[in-house]
Structures are given as C-alpha cells and as structure tokens.
Length: 415
Ligand code: NIG
Ligand code: FE
Image 1 (cartoon, rainbow, N blue to C red):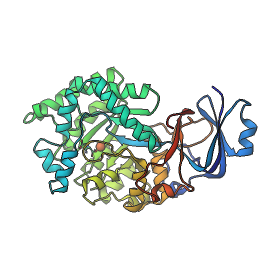
Image 2 (image 1 turned 90 degrees about the vertical axis):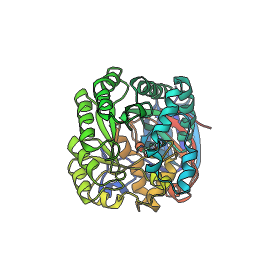
Image 3 (image 1 turned 60 degrees about the vertical axis):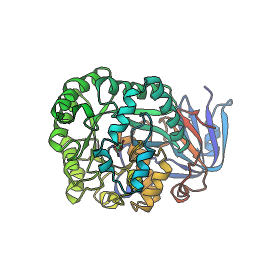
Image 4 (image 1 turned 30 degrees about the horizontal axis):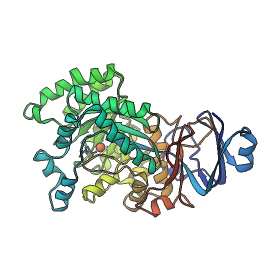
C-alpha cells in the first residue's frame, strides 16, 4: 500500500498528549496544528506536521489527498452504543410526545422488551444487514470506533447471535468495534415473576458461553432499582469479573448514586448515563478512577431535561467521556456531532472538552488509547475530514453530519 498524504488542512486536531485519559484543564488542550498535513504508512500515522515536513517524508508514489482547507480530526470513538436490533420504536417515540413516559411504556411490555421480541425473530443475516446500514450513518458523523453492546436477545442463543453480528461487523473493517455483553439489560417476558432464575441463567450459562467464544471484552448491567437493583447487579458483575470481563455499567440513569457507588466498588472502567448522580457518586467515581460516559442524546430524546452534571465531574478530576447511546428506544442517533452540540449547549462543556471526551477519553475508556483517539506517530490512521473551518463549528452548526471523508487504517470508507 502506498503512503497516504493529506495536505491543505486548516487545522489538524491531533489530541497529542499523555497516553491516558485527559482530566481537568488537559481536556481543553487539543494540540492543533494550523495549516497542517499528515502522512500514513501501512495503516498507521507516520507523522503529523507542516506540509513541507510531510512531503519530505512521504514516498514518491504517495497518494495525495487535498483536504481543501478543511479540518481533520481523529475518528470519533463512540463509547456506548446498542447497534444490533430489529425493527424500531417510532411508535413509542410518538406515544412519549403524547405524554407517556419511558417507564410507563416499559411497564406495559413495550420498550426494551418489545425490541427483544423483534430481535429474537430476526436471523443473523438480517441483523447484520441492519447493522451495516447503521454503520454508514456512524461513518457519516465521523465515527470510526464504537463500543457495541448486545442486550436485545436475552436468551443464550440470541445474545450469542447478536455478539456474532458485532464480531462480523468489526471483521469487515469499515468500523472498529469493541464488544460488550449486556444480557442484564432487562428481565425477559418469560422470566417475569422468576427473575432469580434469569440471573442464574446469566451467571451460569450466558457469561461462560460468551467468554468461551471470546465474543465480548466487557460486561454491562442496566443497574436501576426497577431493572437490576444493586444486589443483583453486583452478583452478575462479580461473576463476569471472575471470568475476566472488564466492567461497564448503566448507572444512575433515573435514580441517584446506587449505580455509581457500585461502579466504584467494582473498579469498573466506566459508569454510563449518571443523569441522577449526586456529589456522593461523583466523589466515589473520582476516587476509583472510573470514567463517566455521558449520553446527552438519550436525555434529549426522552425529553426529560435532566442532563448529567459534566462541569462538576470535570472539576472533580473525572475523565469525562461522551457517547451516542445509539439504540431504538431512548437514543436513536448515531451522530457524534449532535452529541458534541448537546455537550456544549446542555452540559456546558467547552468545544475542546467535548472533542477530548469524544476521542482520546473514549478510546482510553475502551483501553484503546494507545491505538486510536488521537493523531500521533504510530497510531492507527483513523481520521475524518470535516466540512468546517474551525473545530468549534462541529458543535456550533448543529444537526448535520459533517464528515466529508473518513479513513480507517488509512483506507477511505465513504465518498
Ligand atoms: O442506554 N438504559 C438502558 N438501555 C438503553 C435504552 C435501550 C432501549 O430503550 O432500547 C439506554 O438508554
Ligand atoms: Fe445504553
């Protein structure tokens, strides 16, 4: 493969810096190279610098891409998605507008359990076809890596089916995936009234099967008093950790602190949502170095107005991270540019903090900080050319997908 050279970039937003998640004032340092260029060789970044420096290094047969004075960013790393499901829930979306709440819809058998019914009926090929369609959407927003959860199967066979789809999607090479097992997303219909049996199935059958097949690196639990309360969540996560899974958690989406305290106790990599978290939870997460993954698009879409307290978290030294929470219920969006906009307008993050949270911090939350999330020598050549003159325009001109070209390992994916 010949070298790939990208020139004429008004800004190359490199995020170069320490090889760990960024906290505090570090989140505002983007290490931008003005009028920059980069060269990639064998799928990795060889150098980022001025055009003259780059052209000196590149081989004579290099492919030259003119960015047209646009802005180059590392591919976004979306730290929380549920991308494999059948059907959608546009009907519930409309019911919520008419006044029904997410919890009411769930209580009458809609919500997650409705997507589970459709997903169980779908074959692997159909699910893969749907996931490929969503992959195109992720790419158009400039995303190159997603954390991808199962959780709409809730039988051993259906969870394995979903995780195989995630593996296949990753193997196709057009979007990197970090798989997470979320069998504890909900108690399925057939276990209503005997939830302990479902938890036994999770612990004794599903977790070992997923681990044996190497289909997930992390385990997540929807920890919420009305879904999996702390005592149950702890049991599931301890079993997962004993097998070797790393831990991510849906925590404090609706009720305060229990989830975040458990995430801290378990030494989780991340605690996600945190809309209801208070001082107690933030302090525990900071002491245990758990990364908060904030998902403002789900707050927006549920219309609840309770956004997580990003400023307090940043002030306490937490390595704030962002994700879309792409799913058919609470957050049907793949757009990291939209999430950046919400981070600035609703979470009151600076544009630079939001971009750090969507790139290097997200990569570190997935233990991929040495490979993706910044444009530095030796890292994978995963980047996007965005149609703007300044990185702040990404959240500013909101509601559009900004990527003009997206490269994964130096290979162009769209347009
Ligand atoms: O992260 N909170 C739980 N899971 C998803 C919602 C999934 C769904 O509604 O299908 C979330 O918001
Ligand atoms: Fe989620």
